[in-house]
Image 1: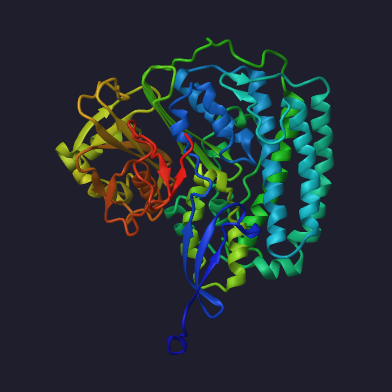
Image 2: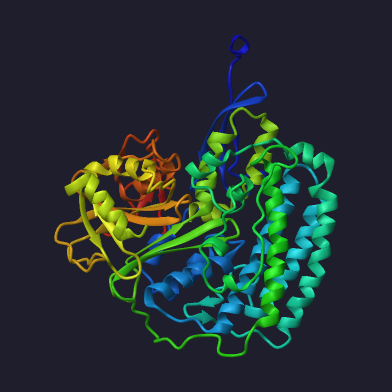
Length: 372
Length: 170
C-alpha cells in the first residue's frame, strides 16, 4: 500500500462541531479516506476549578464540582461530598444515603440517555434522540421538584443532602421506573438491534483491554472492553452493597470485544441495572434526618484523601489535601473523560473519516469534565 | 497488600531511595526519591506481587514556606510534590506515592513508557506547575494556550494582565 501513498490532507474537526460533543478539536491527517494521524486539542472550556477551590471553603467547592460533568452533576457532588466526609469522619444519616443513591442512579440514567441518544444522532438516526430526550426530561422534572434546579443541582451537602424529599416524591419516582422500563425495550428495537446501526458500529473503534487499562479508561469504556469492574460493586461505597444489580460487560456479540457497539450496549444495560437499584431503594428508604449536624465552618484535620466512585462516565476521583484551615489546600479532580480523550489518538488512526465520529461518540465524553 | 507491606517490599529493593512511610490521616503514602522514580515505577508495574497496572491519577502540589504538608511538617524551602495514585486490577490494592522536586529546576523522569495514559497526566501537571517530565514524548501545554504565561496552580501565581491584546478578566 505504501507505494500508493498520496499527499496527506490535514482536516480540522471542531472545536465548534455538534459531533464533538462540546468544544473539542481534532487535527486529523488523512491519506485519502483513511485517517493516518490524530492530534487532540482540549482546553477550550478550561476554568481551572482547582484554583478556585483553593480560595473557597469546603462547601463552597460544591458548585464548581457541579460544573465539571454538567450532565451528571449529582454524581460529582456525591463523590466530592464522600471525599470530605472521609477526611472528616462524618457519619451520613441513613435517609440521606438512600436519597443520594436514588438521585445518583437517576442521574446515571439521565446521563446514559443523553449519551445513547446523541450517539444515535452521530451515526445518522434521529428518532431515538428525540425519545431519549423526552425520557430524560422526566428525570430532570424529578430533580427540579427535589431541589429546584434542572442541570446544576448543588443538592448534596457535606453530611447529607440540602432538602428532604417532598411529599409524594417516592410515588413519582416509582411511577417513572415503571414508565422507563418499556421505553428502554422500545429503544432496543429501534436502535440497539437495528441492523443498520449494528453495521455502523460493530467492529469499529475496537479498544483492546490492555490498551484500555494502559490509558486508565474506566466506566462503560472499560467494561465495553470486557473487564468486569464496577466500583459500586468491587470497591463498594455508600450503601451500594445492600442492592442487587449486575455489572454488564461487552462480549463482542455483534463484532469484537471492545467495539463501539459493545460500549453502547453496556450503557443501555446499565440503565436497566440502575432502574433495579432505584426500585429497591425507594421500597426500603427509611424515615429520619437527611443531614448530619455539622459546625458552620468545616475544618478537617491535617491530612489527605483520595476518594473515587463510579460516576456515569467512569471513575471520578477527588484528591483533597487539608492543612487544617477552613479552605482546602489542594483539590484535584481525577476525570474519567480526560483519560478517555487521550486514547483517541491511539484508536482513530487506520479508520475511515466517517468512523471518527462514531468512535468519538462511543466513548461519551463531556468536555466540561475534560477541561475542568 | 496494604501500604505498610508495599513499603517494606520497596525498601528491601531500593533501600535509601524510599524515604518514608507517612501514616497520615485518611490515606497513608510513601515518599520516594525523585531521581529513582522511573525504576521504582517500573518495579511497581512489573513485580508479580505488586502489578500496579493502572496509573489512576497524577497531581502536582506546590508548597511555599510556612505551608504545612499533609504529614504536619512545615515547609522551609518552596517545593513541588508530585503525587501518584496507583491501582492494581490483578491484586485489587492501591498505593499513593509522592516525590519531591525543588523549585530551582523542577524536573522528574516521565513514566509514559510504563503507562501510556501518563502522557496526558504529565502534560497537565506540566501545564499547571511547570514541572518538566524528562522523556515525555509530547510535553506541551494542554489546557492553557501554548503562549500563556506562568503556571496557574502555583500558590504565588499572578494572572497576566493582557493576553493577545485582550484584558484578562480577574
